[in-house]
Length: 266
Image (cartoon, rainbow, N blue to C red):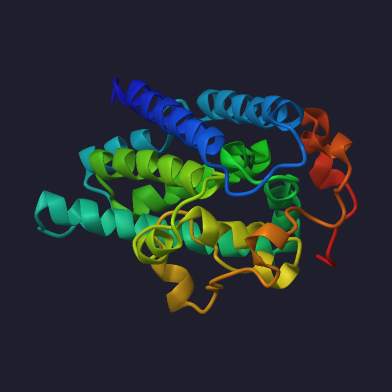
């Protein structure tokens, strides 16, 4: 429990630096907007989110797992199963719940106003993966706390899920090039950048696809999978119609964006 912040921070920094280096060495797309115009604001939003969560939820989801385990609460605490099986089941259920939450944030207009901050980025790279509005982060944490308690997920499972989710989110948002054959195989096991990039298309029918962050099976199972963008990855336009100005990339504009007029009829 005490080592949790160090484990999560270490994993985050390590994966972020790895993806950033990969982006410099082998970018998938040429970016029209430089990193200096985007990264300080995207990372600034991450700092705001992190501080807010630490203030409002000091123990976060791991604390909920410890609390539930000590009191025997939750479904997994009511059954006798090997520890490894409980961890696997918890990882799968938690990932499915995150997929469902993501779909809901697209379907419900009031939630979309929060989530569209993530989609309004005009480029797609590792920092897009950490660009979420603070209110969305708070709502997501409340949902996660309730889910962890009801499920009875162990602290180990929750920590593993948090680390994996952070790592795969940065990976599948990275502007990195990989062999087509490797992507074709890998996307059966994890959401790849080429798979998730479709989700950031300016076309709504493509935005409303490929919702998975970690496990890629849910999109195929529930009919939300789209293999490739219509215009191809080089011709794909990233972002939203309503927020095309570079001024919209500023941190203050990101924080106030949910109060602005809606886009795409949502």
